[in-house]
Image (cartoon, rainbow, N blue to C red; front, side, top):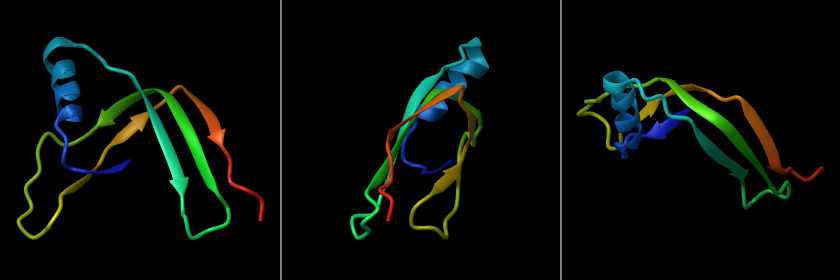
Length: 86
């Protein structure tokens, strides 16, 4: 998962696991939609999401905005919205 590096929440979750052994699971709602397309949108709900790896910090003086890639697993999913057939 590619995300902007603008929130400390994921690092707080990681540190809680590292220091206290508390493994956090959450839901992730992902919507893919292009308003210029006639295909509509697709929404997927991932359940039991658990982060496998991520960076604790980043430093890059060449970039305007930092991003990061996190690997994760999940144990269930629901398809809430589907693309229209074209």
